Image (tube, rainbow, N blue to C red; front, side, top):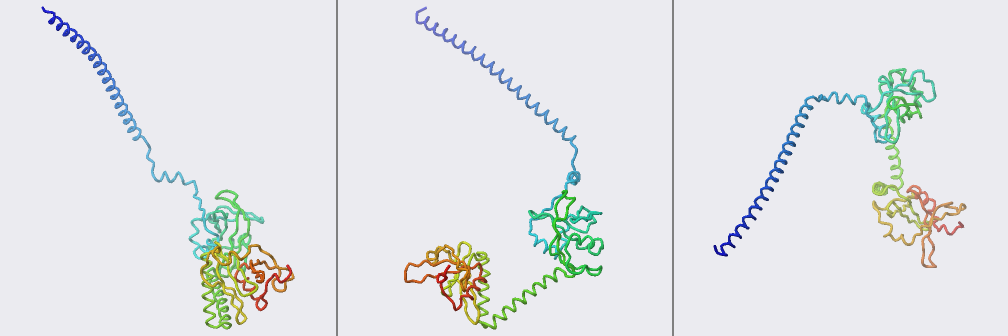
Length: 376
């Protein structure tokens, strides 16, 4: 056998050994992987079995749970009384009570004066047959209202005088008209059960709420008619139309800016303007005719104070006139800033509203002059 053949056989033998070793190694790894796979499969089967067991237990527990009905659920809250806390002004509650008191009954607690209570501030307790209602208002406290249908009972009328100040004659069984002007104020002693009178209310008998309101409205209309009649005699139809227009402007200004902060009146000549919140400036008319002296807005809107001609020339330093001033004693005012020495210094009186401004104009009419001309 030649040397080349021997070398070839040796190489093949060596290569066969490597293949045998690699196969043995692969066989070992395969067995390990197979074992790991078998172990993983077993763990997965165990997890599935555990989940199935838990599901079975849940189904078993679900079948044993007691069913809670709606009636049982609501009954669990039956002992907890609902708090009725209204967030409305007292004036609005009085309007509702006067017009349709039945609306308030579901949210009120019915109470009665405690038996054998002879004290200055009576105690009131929950009583389904009581003659009074207790109503709680947010951040205002507890208030006592007479139950409207209770005045036919003498017992209610007897206790009424210990809880309310009475105006008018106490009604008989044939007349139970009344007007609640102010409910009684209560202090809480025991939640939802017991209260004590803190301040008496005010009731007027012999007058129904609607009749009282109609009388007020008729009285206001009569007053306005008299005012317009007097103005018509003084200024005529044209002046009356102008006054009505000015009144409408004043109402619109109030809706847009609120009440005026101050009214400025020139004491040297009939000039004025109003300052509203913002600040906003509204030019005013000064009316001096046929015995009428009025300060009224000249328009229904204002301009920003910073853009007005008065912003730089009017001082904000408030002064006060002398107590001996013959026209405007102790009158708050400020001076108008002047840049020319020969120019006269104008002063501006400060009023809080149009009525006060009109009064100041009536005093200055025919006597215009600077408040600086008098000692301060």
